[in-house]
Image 1 (cartoon, protein in one colour):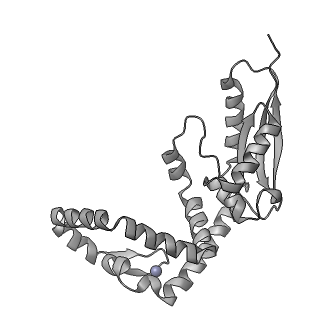
Image 2: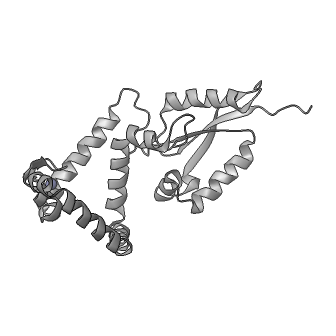
Length: 216
Ligand SMILES: [Zn+2]
């Protein structure tokens, strides 16, 4: 039998340490895997590659081995070791952790995803606007139908809910209806409060005890 090549656990991260967020993976052929990542960074829509493009492209990022696993018997062996590294580094961009669904990942990373999305929106206001317009256009009938049906079924509860005072993401107390449909979210007050909150959020992530991958 031909000898198996060692498995290599690797990390992909930005050369600029100020840009956080990384990816941990495993491969039996480092060079081939490197080229696939490089190619994906040009056109893949996955979050990792979107972020690599947003931060200057693959040339600004590096892929480095973390560990060599020579004596593995089945893929499960080195996937276990990969998992250990994933748990250690808590990389933001590993959505396919063994035994974890995408939904689990989203649940665990809610705060980081929100910051990532808000950053993207702030950096790409035109694209975001277009996305919203496109989405509304494509789903107009569907959205209308769902809303009408829902309203019929839940009228009382909706009225009660609409008057319910809520705290906006910016920190303001405001009725739910006004929050969803009023002008508050376009106001300068909301905008300024939100900028403060975003700053706080980033600080909070930076001061996590491992201090490994705050995104910004
Ligand atoms: Zn607000």
